[in-house]
Image (cartoon, rainbow over the protein chains, first blue to last red):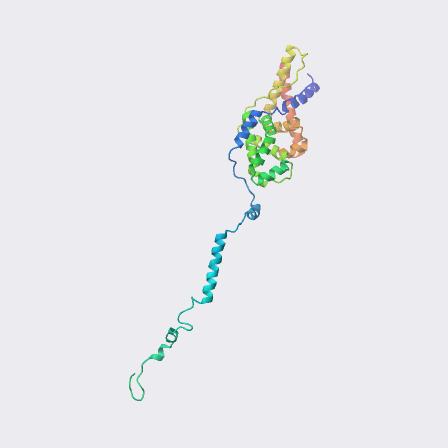
Length: 117
Length: 181
């Protein structure tokens, strides 16, 4: 076999030996079966995080919304009714006493007679 | 429904397991064959094909359709084959299906078979990148540019790989022929 014949033989042999073998159905089935189990977690890029958040469904939880509205309404009523107002302010009967200057109720003797109250 | 590779990959990126299994069923036979030809070992080829398909699943959300899916998957399989630390023992592909000239005599047939066995063994002895380049070029009929994309190298580097691979094969065959002569 000379050089040219060897080169030709090599070209044809390479084509024969590197050709795709007929599909091995059993091997394919085996691999597919192994892949049918639970799959690993997918790797998600960080730049997709905003998109992932936007994909979430923020469905309103109506009972919680109702509870929040009730609390808001109760706060409004309390604010209007003034239940939280201090008892020593405004029209309370204790207000006059409590707001009086302590110094004004010191019992001192009468300057002329020396009588004491 | 669009069932192109790219459409399936988009569905896989959203976690669609059915799309993944459809894509795996479509490409697994070819990828198994490719891994088998590069590694020369059926068991390792199955492991590589399985690993490659799992990478398709895990990397699907990050996959960008910059190249054809088939090219990308081929690249994954070839890289996995080349990365195998444990060098699998080469088992020559069966010469089944090859048409032998019936006019050949017994001695000629024996000589022919011996030569085929030598070629298979010589291919098995090639460095892995040279073998991968030869398999992709001769077996899958890829152009040098496509092989360069799969092997992540330049076209000139692919040409060098092919040339050196064929030189190595020719040298091995010449040595055997000289010994016989």
